[in-house]
Length: 220
Image (cartoon, rainbow, N blue to C red; front, side, top):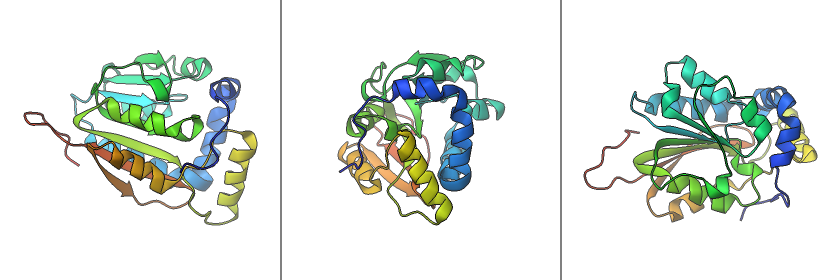
């Protein structure tokens, strides 16, 4: 089962911390989640083509979107979603479609996107199982879901341990069971899941939706 599930909706929490989020998040990446973030970005870079429709679910302040646009991805092919008005306001400089919405009830039709990314957002929702099902639902056959999240792996040392305690103390999320996330994705029935190696209390997963006859897939 998922562990330490938050008992409250964190959208208001992230509204309040939006102006300082990037500072805290850079510290998290430096000391704990950097390898998982690098792995996710490498996956997306390898998979993107000029025709790729991408959803960044839980886009936060838009850091990933800016990185991809700077590397040549068209913002016209990108959709940013977040439940926090303040976080979306921090994305106002990004000329992509921006949607306020929750991971547990994505406001999109089935099989809409070639790539769905969800970095450091799954652990912030009250119902991760439902969020995973929704993320899977909007991936096209042959497309992929790329996840990076706080995982219940042992801390590597003092810095990892302190970052874990800081996240829990601030009430910013939880540490999910790596095995349970994989199990939930595999139980979706149409996904092949690969774990990308990284260290620290964080994980990166690639879930590819199986193709249907006559569809074009993204090679992985």
